[in-house]
View 1 (cartoon, helix red, strand yellow):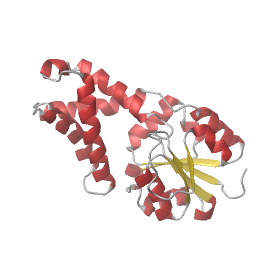
View 2 (tube, one colour; view 1 turned 120 degrees about the horizontal axis):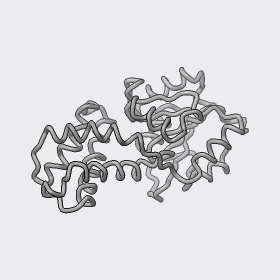
View 3 (cartoon, helix red, strand yellow; view 1 turned 45 degrees about the vertical axis):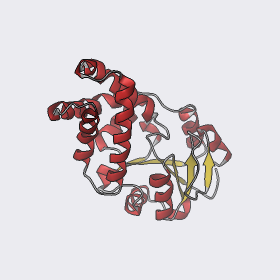
Length: 233
């Protein structure tokens, strides 16, 4: 075990839990269930493309504190349907509820997720999660995918009443874990939330660059897959 770090704070979605795969499967299930092709949406791929655009924009606004959780949850569906000239608010809200019910039942994770968590636990590190997701949904994801037992503390934006990259959510996590900044590191895929958040909290960072993106925020380390974390820890 490196003497430099004791507490490793992971992001969940897009870092360990394969949000893209799991959300796409969930949305496809709902597309079929609600027969959206009969409502004028030619293909699921068209629907998913529009949803992804709106979801990303709304998550960015949520992270910046401009909108609340409830608005994020249903408006991503509402705006997507509007792109296909479907102005159906009840359907939007129904899709929102069903999406969050079904999403946590999906269990795809990135390659080497379990192996690297076993490796890090075996080396004596304390593992924790800091996620901008919703409390009930994130815990359900962890339980269903078999990840929960690896983490001593799970801090969500809903549970902490704050969001990454604000330093307050990190300080809240430090207090729960009894961790100090100089013995902690943030590991995540999102440069604005995870890497800038780590910088704001005064800790080292690992940019998990699954998609080979261009780095534009300074980080302490960068890996392109989870197995490469063994080279750091």
